[in-house]
Image (cartoon, rainbow, N blue to C red; front, side, top):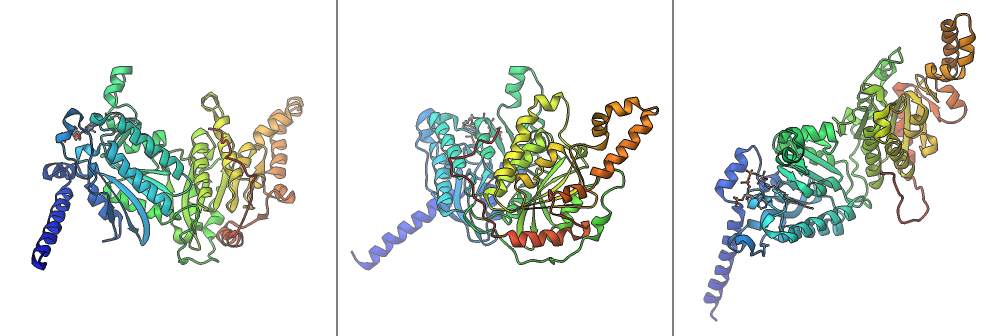
Length: 523
Ligand code: HXC
């Protein structure tokens, strides 16, 4: 063959390749793309462009096609089979991603669509890098039947295998119905976009038909409902761009895998920075609330915190901060809501976060101001015993550095539940305003002095006198300090300095556990 002919043939093949790629890049076609954008959504490719550093995204398996022939599917082309998969760099670090393309057959998941997701997840696992799923799909591709269900099964399995090994984040950017909700639920963090995303097992129509209840799609499974009522959603976002920006912010705190170093920044704040405003934050009256977020922000580098689950179980705060550039997970009671009490949801929220941080070697910093567990039939019958036990289990099994700061109340079982020494805290500090006791003075005196109060000439005066005595004994940190139950009483203003110092010395902490298959956390 002459050189001319050979080149023409090669050139033809290159042109053919380019034509094929160009065609696949049209995704579901102009009309569908316009509908997607008209609904306030980015397309699957635009989302990836926004996620990855410019020019770093490398797509995989673009040419995959479905192989279904049922219900006329043999005549239907679906670009990239409705999902774009690959890897690239997010702020310079490798991340793997799958982005469902709603414009191509509703982003529905059939056999080959699923296999593309399996492939990218397997690579993320082997490469030990985070996986991000951008979900926008009508769910199981009905025409394909069982292979679609198998596809989901394979994803759930991989989500589980990857859990605690690599960080997994899901963005819900469109519909997610039926069993399809369970892949997101198996990942570490779920972000939802307001007004354009929803998640539910059964939709409004089925609910109406089966139990006669009227509910709108947004009220049932929208971002706000899941962020504030069910606790399924961890971060609510305004639109697609905001959602992806927030995912990038979260990724900046997370290591690539459980075997990778934490992503530390060079410190932009000083180790010795005092926080004098904290000396005045605790109100004089014990029943008065204050916002624990002020304390968390005050001690964090540059006063920055990335809060998760902000709208759910607000009586406890979970957040990621940096201390001298190193990521730290914060768990803190917030007296602004239900006096910072521990209840079912707060226990679940904190326990899962503690396990996440421990899995990825992120040290734990706990701020305690807790009057106890929420009393009442609602909580008892909802299983506060079972759920509260999760918190004890999570703290006890965590082997990362654990620091606790008691700012005010630390009563009873809740004192233990917020990572006291005996749950393995490496260092417990208390402010002079701390009150560490089995219970508050009122309740305690009613029990231990019942007879004495009843027999007194003036029971009210006697009661007040006995309460004062109890408060003198226990409503301070010094009794606990005298027993070594806490390691130090510190000025609130010095809290950041002390935390910096302890984290610094505990960086290399190694704590060992009995070798076993796995623990059995109360679920
Ligand atoms: C096949 C589907 C589909 C599905 C949507 N499409 N969902 N095709 N299987 N599950 C197709 C539509 O036919 C249409 O194809 C295209 O996707 C876009 O859908 P539209 O309906 O035009 O879009 P829209 O009006 O925005 O409505 C979106 C929707 C609706 C609300 C998601 O399509 C819908 O209700 N779909 C069914 C959702 C569902 O019930 N899924 C659960 C399946 S069971 P054309 O060719 O016209 O563009 C499940 C179980 C999983 O997921 C179990 C895992 C364990």
